[in-house]
Length: 91
Image (cartoon, rainbow, N blue to C red; front, top):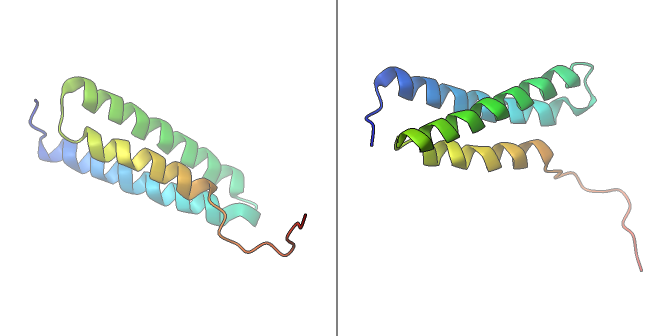
């Protein structure tokens, strides 16, 4: 198991925060003209967090679990729809 230095921890935590913020921005920017930019930012952050997770797991770092937990939170945050639908289908 490798000990993580303070710079590594700062980069990992910073990237996770950026990833979560990019998921929120990708969701909020749904009707903005900058939607494509925020979606690309989200996909880039998702890729970087995934690569950091794999790298941390392969090297035996203890921080791989938090990076692994960030991935589904990002995916869910970018795709969840909590708005009420105006019409309900009935059978």
